[in-house]
Length: 178
Image 1 (cartoon, rainbow, N blue to C red):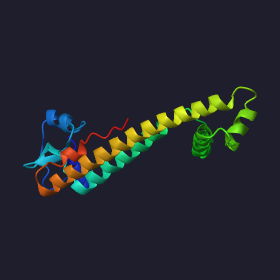
Image 2: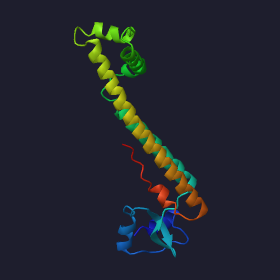
Image 3: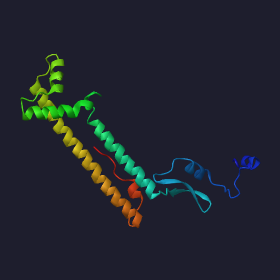
Image 4: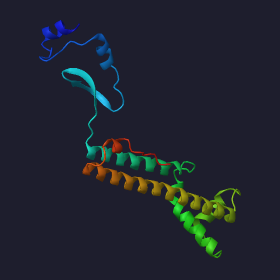
């Protein structure tokens, strides 16, 4: 319907072809997964997206990094923004006081003193050590997942580069970290 207007405007392509209304409505919509609008024998067609293996690898690797960071952030959610700044000092003091009750944990004593009677040193130390163990376990799990997936992704990239695997394996790589 637009051919005459396009010809007047000088924008009708030299190799333009007429298509049916059905094709027009089919190809002006969203493409199926993994496809893009292209042409086949001069007519519109859904064609496979061609991925550059290096770009696909880089994108997927970055997704793993972001997902790992998000998983790490998620285990810090209950803490105020100040807490991480002193966390390891608290853990070191709690471990030192547990090993030797004569050790004076400066930060922890100040926390107890400022708590208005809500904390006592022994229960604060027990909580800190319990949280440290849980944090180490969660962090180890996250790091293990990232390392495992990076090794699998690297092996897949090598297989793609050698021609024994398809780049879609990289594009569709399982990236969640939890």
